[in-house]
Length: 222
Figure 1 (cartoon, rainbow, N blue to C red):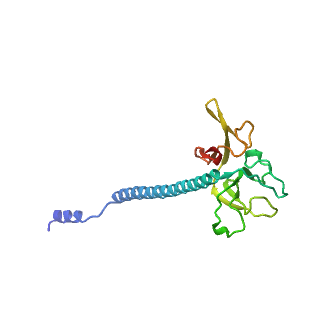
Figure 2: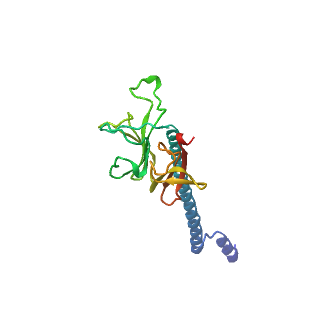
Figure 3: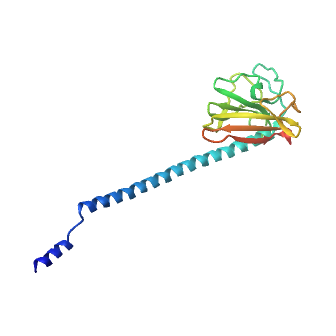
């Protein structure tokens, strides 16, 4: 074997140079970083979809419960824990005769019909006293076993929405010059009815999202 042939054989069996290895590692690192970033985006998108899906589900449950409550409102005034009859059967906004507890905002309170009691097994009527409360960052539906108030009567709270920034309610008083007239409290001066408002508007605000306004008819508005 000549020296030239031996040199060609050794050159053909030679490996990558250091520069080639460094370039290959650099390309591999770019590919790996892109894969990790894509995987991270996928995980974050999945988490965001789960949060959005949960919020939509909670909104649908809230709307279903409120629709049932408002459509079955009855003009039944309640008695407080001292036995005094309250002047109105429906209260909304700042018109509540009872001062709210610290950290809560009473949105509305009323009596509804249709509380299921199969076979009248429970010692109660089919009427139910309902309150809606904005408590810290939660929209809460609050009920109690009996319609009229009594000392030490327990309340049952159910959180409908959480993570809220603010909740506002409005009550339809009527129509003026072809436009709906909304008030921030009930009973309200100038309203066409003294019982329940014909319709209720509930606006919920979340951080970094646009306010959502939900409209409901009541039994008085049908």
